[in-house]
Length: 336
Image 1 (cartoon, helix red, strand yellow):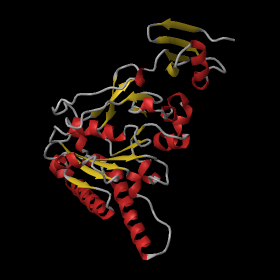
Image 2 (tube, helix red, strand yellow):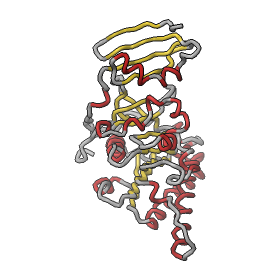
Image 3 (cartoon, rainbow, N blue to C red):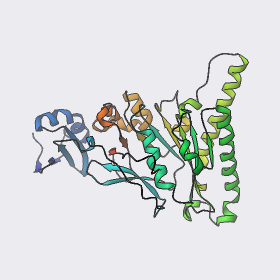
């Protein structure tokens, strides 16, 4: 039996609202998305649950996310620090990512697909307010962050001992804030008051994060010393992510691969926000976004592994089911 359906055509594509029946539920439509796209003459079809027993299908003649986008930075302090602007969704509406009550975020994806530009866009939004401070750690050891260091509280390149010294200072701040928050702010969660110049949100950016958690094999003294250093970096990062939320300390981990051998799962799985640019494998997508991405093959970052999709990311958003594809904008580094 064919399920009842209502179709609406517009200049961008076709929208269908279909009644779910046995063998034709949301998962079935997601699996059949490629076939339906060919049949309807669309480049893509996305399926979503719109109501109990109703599945919405949106087919597009052209992928709206293929068009690169730029954003002008205002240089003005944001009106709110509860969220930050990530980019535009497939429907053209702005997509924001939660900032409040977050202690950890993972941004994964292949090199050259948009991670560094995303950080520039984020820092460009937050830098104008004295209620945010930055800690910049760059595992690439290159020049990407050199022009931002004057705005940072602390900074380090790819030297593990320098990184340890920086993370120790951030960890000390977190511990001191935990001890002082009740007497200084009169609350046990800094987000109940919101960040301020006197108690700023501390954003710790760790680019190429996997390079700081890699243990070596062997029993030579220098190998043991390296592994002890890596173990401390892992512990510091884990504690910042596990305990930093209520005192407004937040860690942003950027990595080409978010698998457990690159980012320890005890660190990765405590991060409340996950964003993924293009990945090569489904395992990489699952590591970045969680097991649920297996149930949404039409939104998988594996499909973004094409130069046309540089700057397009996948994320899940609070209050919205499934995953959203987002066009993140390019920004002018001089503006940043």
